[in-house]
Length: 240
Image (cartoon, rainbow, N blue to C red; front, side, top):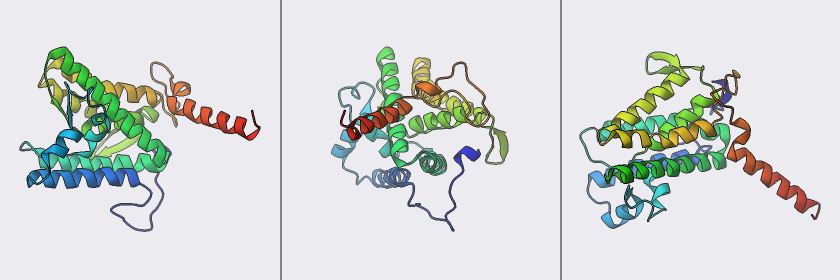
């Protein structure tokens, strides 16, 4: 796990200054949960930010805004919020420090959008209309990215030691079971973002050299974009 080792703070900070994107998502989910629980969040604004599987492609901005809203319905909503915010604080903060804010912003909302598109596909195939407002969609995908970079790294899940790859499998299983209650097809399509995350992560370990079924590390779109930016700046510098 040394690849993702964070910098020291010299003390605990609830909202570290080097993780602005993670902080924004945390605060947004916490505030919206409370406002919805108190029933003072304007429903007109909520309908603009949260899409459904039947409307998300007609309202494409909701592909990026749904992770900012924490819905407060259901008996387990508060526990789900606490656990998802804890996981975002830990995992999102670690990845944002490792990657940098710009790359983390691109990855988080990119995977959010991909996950929502696949979930919408499941809704279309089954004819089931679901709200797309689950922070666990991008969180599961980010967990897969992390695990694909260092699958054999030892981690502690609460008091249980395990390899990182099995933690990713477990989180994916939870997401599948949650959506499979509507339909097995929707359960499968809910993992579309996680599948994309596996390939974006390279399907390989950066520290152990372990590879997945194929090595996509050299085909990472982020690497293409960085190389393209470098070449463009180089050509501009030389007046080409």
